[in-house]
Length: 182
Image 1 (cartoon, one colour):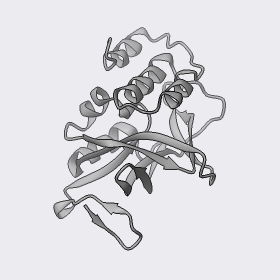
Image 2: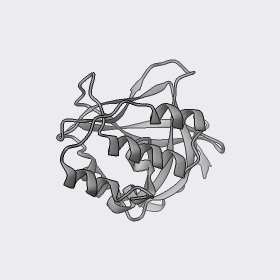
Image 3: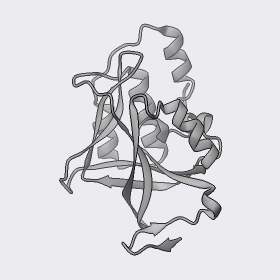
Image 4: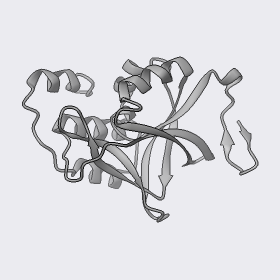
């Protein structure tokens, strides 16, 4: 790691061959992200300061998925997992996330125990207030938060998000296979 002029830790990436991504939704769960980006390695947890977690990303399945909204208030934070992945896997991950079709990407500062670093995040470009996630989707987010040891109070808040039932039983079954009790 090196330090840039802004004092932010930079992960060494020879020839730009890897990318740092901050996961705050269902991609925190290792089984989920590794299916999309097999090279993804969890580097630790971090905080996106001045943002809040939302569930208002309009999904093709008519449910709400995670996004973040900038609040400007330093007491608001979104916890998540810092992943490093190959540039090739990042392209596959972009496709799976729908980059350019409901999600955009942005480079942000993430606070970690080792200091600050720059990471890419996905954020919703297609939002609809009042959406609810499917129960399985919220459960994926909670499982990822627990897997990586995010603060218990934060996990409790995420676990308390109201959900709706997915009546597409095949889709729900496919999604739940990522869960530890799967």
